[in-house]
Image (cartoon, rainbow, N blue to C red; front, side, top):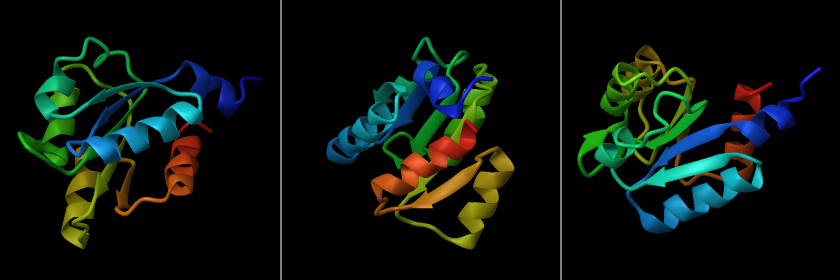
Length: 127
């Protein structure tokens, strides 16, 4: 039987966050949980990543300089992304939650985001 930790060890996670400090923090949490992380500052850079079609998960900020997280997931799906997705936002609302879920996000997490919450959410996606 394959354990959730074993799946995480082999999983590529695409990360997009425009704030460099937040991006680095999220990247360290994900790497510490055993994920291979490809991090980007913009939606365009993420869409250009050659791992779009093979990544198992994506963690995306809602407000990006060139897109928003909901539109970005739709663009990712058109580019071949079939993984799990988590939206991170400092601007949560019931409307955003509904549109994010309709687009295919498994979870919407609000900033400030505790490391434990991200770790537990990711583990839940791979259990």
